[in-house]
Length: 67
Image (cartoon, rainbow, N blue to C red; front, side, top):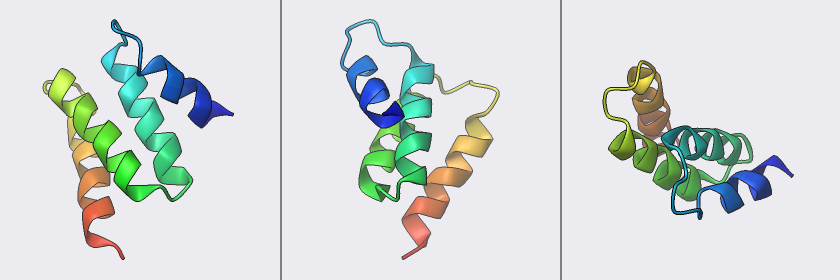
C-alpha cells in the first residue's frame, strides 16, 4: 500500500524530494532494487545538500554492491 501511494506521489509535478526518498526506501524494503535505486538517486538529485544524503548514498552503494 505505501509503495503505491509513494509511486503516485512522485508522479505529481510538484512532488517534494522527500517523497522520492520514502518511495525508494519502501521499494528497497520490498527488494525492488532497480526501482529503489532510481528513486533514491532522484532524491539526491533534487536535494543534494540534504542532511541525510550520506545515509541515502550508503543505501545506494549497498543496492549496487549486493547481489
